[in-house]
Image (tube, rainbow, N blue to C red; front, top):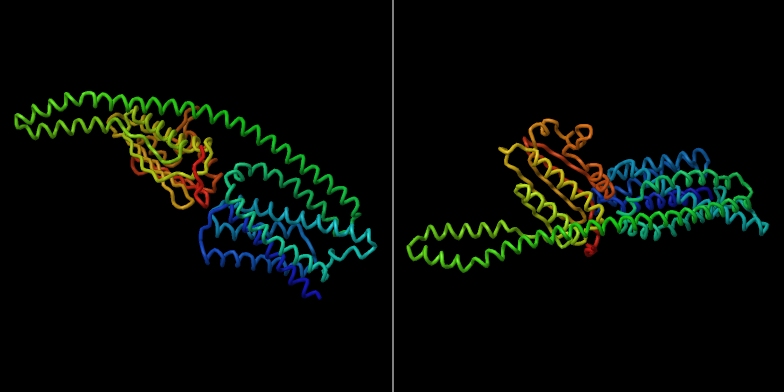
Length: 448
């Protein structure tokens, strides 16, 4: 019945690889879609599972740490071809997934070993290439399928939070890997009672870690809420002043409308049609200068854009802003400020450094393409800064921020959502484009 066992081993390995790819499916955006994605996943699953099972047959091993790491590497290579992700991210999440599955497998085997021992029955039925172990692997694979579907959906919904705490998750891999190596003692027929005692310590340690992590999250959330509240107050005050200025200017023009009508009558009575049209254009120009408020249907983004673009206009920088409906944007307030405020601050500072004879310019575009947020900012820059090329994104002088002040914060947000940054310099015109997965799969509504 060796053939039955190896078939079950192959199916179990294939489902475990599929499970890990479901994690990638939830965390990263696919480079290909539809049948091409499924074919790519099937190819990765088939090749890696065949490689692992061939190794099991040749070397007669049930589990290998080296093979687990090698599988994570191979799946990461395949995942990099299928998904928009960094290789290191794909590898870390693969290791995390395979290690978690291995720990669950060892726990089940330890529990079964202890139960069989207490009943005086053969204890190694799951610790050899037997029909019983084949059936166990088959049941494990079947139960893993709905878990993988749920896990992928959950990660797709909470990917921003998952990326935010990926450093802590990476640190958690160290004790998990150590525990995995220790619990392999089940294959050496180690005392199952002592192993179960160790499992209790492991579970208690895991529970303590969860409690400490929860306290850490509560503290971080409280601090973030306080910072957000302060920012909202400042931005609301800024927007109120900007709105007040707009209303005052319009009210002044409306108040003067009576005088304007008398002026029109006098000009037209003299037959001065051209002069009357010129006068109308002058009034329309004044109305246009009074500006309009940006309304992206995302409250916090509106506050940030209106405040920063108002600062640009006060600095004498012509502004053009185009945008799509941003409702459903999943970035937190801190992430919105880190991204948009820093991008616009960099652009405003670069314009202000330009000589007076250079025409200043600030163009902003916020586009939505399905789940992707695309932010493009263009601005003028000095010839000296342009000569430094893309290296201007970093600090250029000790203690003096270059064009890229705040780029570290921008990159942190972009990396948290599996995105990318593209920069280009043409003459004295600098352009930076940010792409990231900022929208939910089903377009959730805006939450302030």
